[in-house]
Image (tube, rainbow, N blue to C red):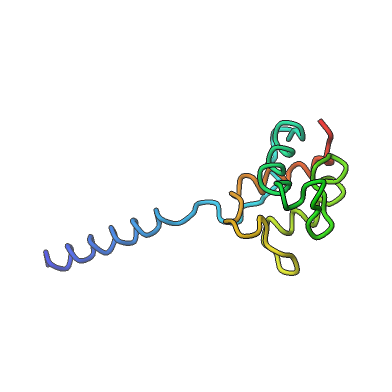
Length: 121
């Protein structure tokens, strides 16, 4: 009986360990709980500049695939395609190209900004 209990306990530990290794918020883009206002100047523009509007990509001079993502007008005008690309949805090229997918928290922030009206704040 002790051997059976030891095996059950060992299996429970393995299951617990495996569950702790999973990403807690995989694709959690739920924008229903966007409690804070997302600010373009301090949150969205730096996110885009760092990950999209880098030299040779979607900057003003290169405009890869026809997208210049350096101003509020250009980012807000392309917001839906940018969101699809950073979500790695079918029908778009996964962005940032050649790099890992952005963190779910950043994708959610971008989604919230869109749902809040793409404010230039």
